[in-house]
Length: 95
Length: 337
Image 1 (tube, rainbow over the protein chains, first blue to last red):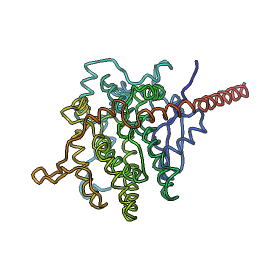
Image 2: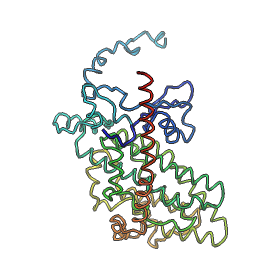
Image 3: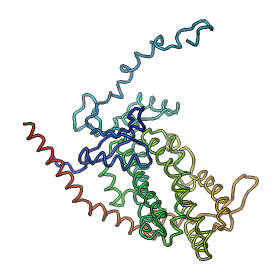
């Protein structure tokens, strides 16, 4: 199959050391080197980053949006996993 | 932007890029309505009505095309900027416009349309872009007025879009708005410098303002009573403030700014109305607006021709880069075998 459009890459940027890489957008590029170069030009023109990851978009596997209930609802009835579930006496409530 | 081509489970590879499910479904529709009512965002892979998807593709791609075509009138002055400082600023600004176009194309692509299709629609004259970029930049003062008024109007339009219901578009707009403020301020700064110059320079600013003021007011689109898409877009949370309200907001902000500059806005009917708490203004020449929208403005043909030429002249570069990548892939495979 003739592939004419450059593939899509998702761009993740660490804004400074100590923070996670965060998804910020995407670029089209023929290879990883040019994807990094484009990501730098498009997403870090104002000191937004100290490190960039690019990943071919078709290499990312995502959960199915239609499967949200079975994926995430089981957490809804487990409120005992949160510290606020436990009511302690006032003297020790800030532990 | 935002993972439009990601591989969903149980999908054939050729389905991966197709985008959100278009199937009309009453239960999904109800869920979609509830999300909008709660003020939740719709994300790329969520179900959405086909008309919502089409409206977004039209609006986001028009917006992207406007950014890219908008590079042309200003690019016209890069080599003629009066100082190295102004040249650096203008280069940075035009580069930003290119970046804004890319954020927006990527947001449109999340809706299941390819970049090439979008570009082809522009080049075939099927997709519109903002009518403002079909006016020429005749003097250096035009560059200042574009920053002050054109980008000022764009900011008025774009700030409410940061809260629009479609997540990828809203996030792109947050990024755009952050950068747009630099564009407006550098324009005003450029005009202030000219206004502190000699009589000819001040006159240049006045002339440029006279030429741009009315086309800028047209950027907000037809009156609400005439607006084709307004009501539905408001229901969908794509448009939060109406054309006329945004235009009024812009005029109210621009009048005091013009006073600071020391220029006159070219509208004899522009007067403060105490009862309304707003400036009244004269009627816009809608015949001119539709003429430019329909392809007959001063620069429509030139702008489109420049875009098509850039695309065609760059074809061999795009092909060569892909050919190189394929060669490298073959080499890697051969080495691994």
